[in-house]
Length: 90
Image 1: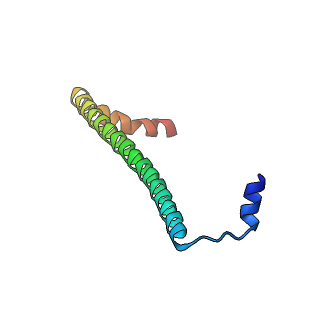
Image 2: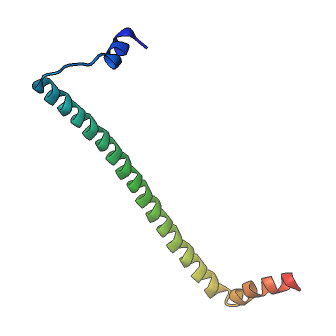
Image 3: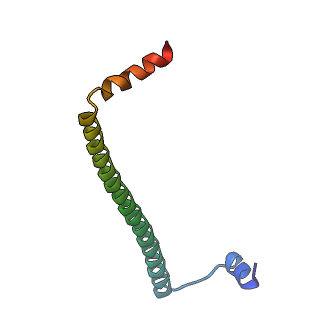
């Protein structure tokens, strides 16, 4: 640790009211900027989630459409799918 940092940690520092106000304003600004970064990260994560959700919804719709086409083309497919577990247990 540097000598200056050690002195700052063990030596009481006197500041006048104006300096204290400046320090507090800087501190508040820093906290606000940190919060802004966190909010940016939250917003970015939410956008990714929403985009993923939209993509999954679109794929789900396409899957349902394909299943309807299969059900129309092969009406006995549902019965066959139900019979498969029965055949495996016999």
